Length: 105
Image (cartoon, rainbow, N blue to C red):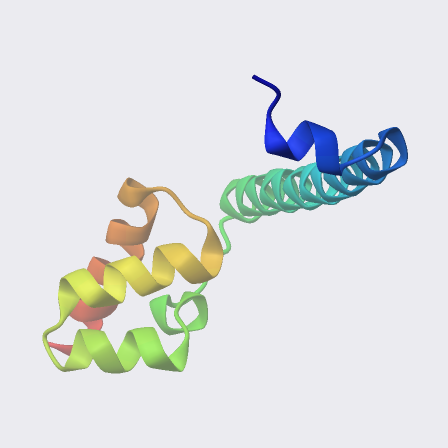
């Protein structure tokens, strides 16, 4: 029994589908590469600031939405939003949010 899809699509159709898949895969890889490059630059900048003894206040690290969630005692939601916005790991995001909460108490 011949599959229906194989009989209704020609070689050109499969070539177009393959091209579309490759284009989207390449775009996704470029985006991922750019994000990892930005994270690497941010880590280096943080290391330089730490080495020079410069520290940013917790408010400078958090967006207004994250700060509002933290003020309203929605720590988990604030943490999740901060991770989503910055791409930080759980430990780093938790540290930022908890440092901010300490300053408002």
